Length: 281
Image (cartoon, rainbow, N blue to C red; front, side):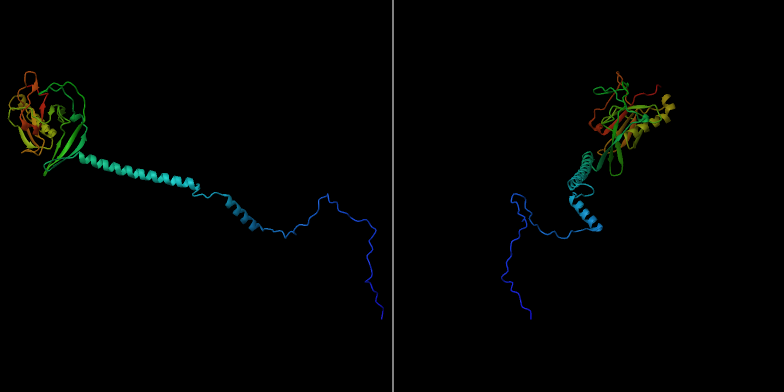
């Protein structure tokens, strides 16, 4: 058996080679954490991550508008719609109130108003007016619009253009006979009724008078028949003969050429007319 060597008494003898001595004035290297493995993204995950980043940087939009602008547009649209609805309702109520206030009643009769524009055959001209008479001479030819009122009765309807037609000239269609109108009064006649029948309006009464004159023209010029130169039309249902047409020869003119007008209170029920360009006989 080999003998064992005892090394317990051995010592390390310092070497004689140069030693590295650290300069305390120089920066020291400090050990840091050990870096972990690097993270690599695939192309698909990289695109998704980029879209998420893009979405997070965008402001939320509604129909291409920012929320504030979108809600402002909606509010304005609602206000405009409500204003239009309110205006329509207001106009309808105003029209109903106007039509309601413009209608009148005479006993069981109902009146409604319509506008009439005179044409060539129904010319209306403004004339000079005396205080209590109507002159036969024409002093002006200013066209005026007239308003006709429908007076609806139990069995028939009357069409009245007074008071807008007062002191205007009406020419019967197909003739040259001109009649001056007078509202709520009567030109006095001789008392002989040529025509006595109901008609719808004062114009219809005048037309009946002029047709009589045309049919009897030869006899009138030869003074074999009387001329129809005045008419009275009952303008209301508050009378014994509503809508009745009475035609007659006018009373002789006064010395100044004016027609004589009735002073009887009952004649307010009458709208009348006088022939102002009577044939020379």
